[in-house]
Image 1 (tube, rainbow, N blue to C red):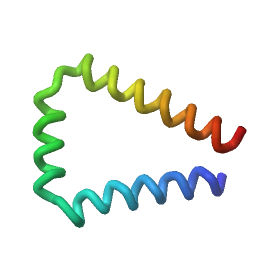
Image 2: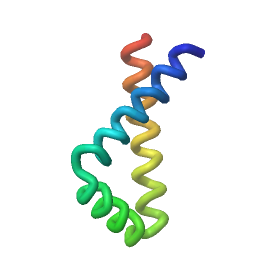
Image 3: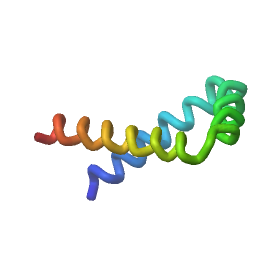
Image 4: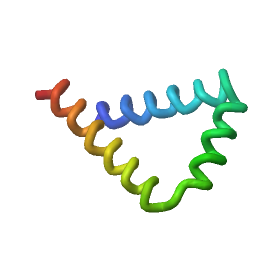
Length: 61
């Protein structure tokens, strides 16, 4: 359970850095995502999930 808390904390740190250091880039990325078709966003999301699971498996394996 503590690993999950650490992972969520790291997500917040990484997301927070984007908005703290480059808010304009964050707005641009959000506008681009809003204009991207759902199927493409869904596909990118599944790729990210898969890569994340592989990284966790390699580190923990």
